[in-house]
Length: 112
Image (cartoon, rainbow, N blue to C red):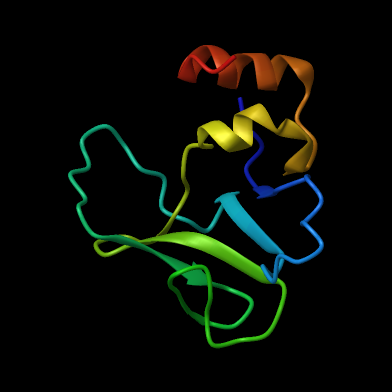
């Protein structure tokens, strides 16, 4: 139901005095591992594709404009299910999701 490549960036304006750099989250990508219900993975982190390194504590060693992906200790880069904030702010998805796709996500996750 979701496109094979899906990105999300918080569409809300960054507050004036917030030094947070823009972060785009790779939700799905055709080259990523697609998790299943049988997976028992326990070690996860985030990887910054823009700067080719781990993304820890809301930062990495690179400059601005981070593009991060879920990094599984067992499978490597992995597609993820959109979290509640993403579903509540669907304007942040690229490509844009249809109303039907957003309704489907909300029904699957019980998000208003």
